[in-house]
Image 1 (cartoon, rainbow, N blue to C red):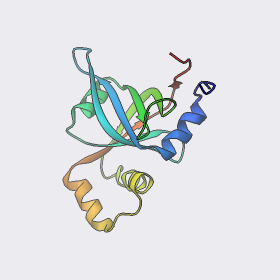
Image 2 (cartoon, one colour):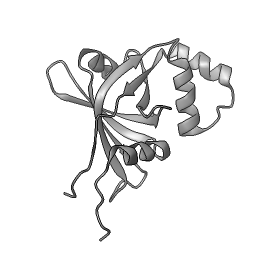
Image 3 (tube, rainbow, N blue to C red):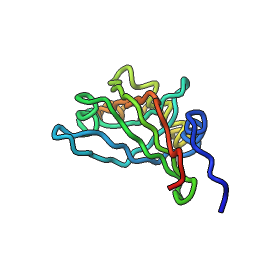
Length: 143
């Protein structure tokens, strides 16, 4: 078995630059967890960024309670193919979110075939950015 290396913040950030699938956990009004599959990236100053719809439960949950936990995974998440990120989230709405949505699209999927079409779709879908300040990461121990 390979030697376990605890995840530190810089390693988690590197992971997000290469792996864009994740599960975001937020808190419902009653305190229970709500989880959503998401596409995730890393902005230019090292915060996790996620695209969502303005009306999504996760967005409403984070507006009420900004605590977020994200498990980012590779396509074969077994072994060392995942990281957990914890931190406070902020919601960025359009029009301020548009440049970040474009940045995330490029990072996760590459160039879009029609940027005007992409921008129109972001407006039509009322897209926002969930931006998470990375405060702690894991795993710290092999379990």
